[in-house]
Length: 414
Image 1 (cartoon, one colour):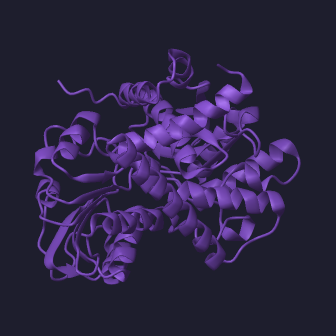
Image 2: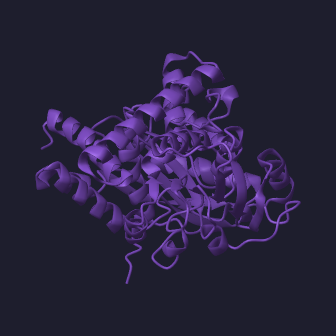
């Protein structure tokens, strides 16, 4: 039976990397579990006058390289194990890209679509009050994630400011630009997916002009990835989201598709396309498959369907460990999530730096710095993979854990 417990999966990945690096077990003992993880109960006064309590979590994995950093998600399936795992991935994502952060993550068990705007605001503010002194610009910097957005971040910053008695724009990233957000943040994750995909195509001798792309998960990340890949000459032939799928062998116009989704909230039914299931999308003979939905999208049950030359992990943990092994054995290059979707946290870092300096950059400056960071990180992984003769995910963990381990050793933690 395949192990789908993501917390145990990431622990196994850490152990394998520690062993490959020749690190003693003390490093693994520190890295295998978060430094701090908390569960909080957030009572919310509902519009009808009743009180409902929501359960929320925040995990801070490792702060050897800097304060914890990571998003907050609102989703009915949020679990403590998921939040802890995502905080661990964030540690390594920040280390891979060279950011002075450790990993954090948070979540609340809630279906936000069932809350009014006022209830959502009260929930967001209540969560910040419960986190209290455990977050801050020098401690732990949250950000948007699944089902959260700049407006929710604005409420959270305002609540934190009220608690502290002064303005703290650097406590949370992903804010509206008007109150200290960074230009270029909205599209940053999708942009990072495209930069790393482009670099992988270069390394493998694949011409992106005319390359076929399928995108699973057509939200913020997937839609920007499709748009920017189209701008590089690729054709988006298939897309899938919660409402269904759309397929056109000759390609779909990414701009028109984004506009269609804004009006219809799904790609299904887009003009000139036929309906497609996830299984049919995975089985398409494409050059690039972008996975931009949720964890465990590809498992041992469906991994055999994949025919793409490159799989770009726009989501966190979209391929299980066992499935990844099988895919890699078939010669398919997987660009791992901790590099591929690190564009978002990179521009979040830029936002934090701008907040601390109180000096703000142009979108051109943001994109130029993002490009440089992502290309350098990809090259480090590609070279590590060639040197150690390992796949890119293993290479990513080797690069990241080496950087975190070196910091822990300098501090005297081991």
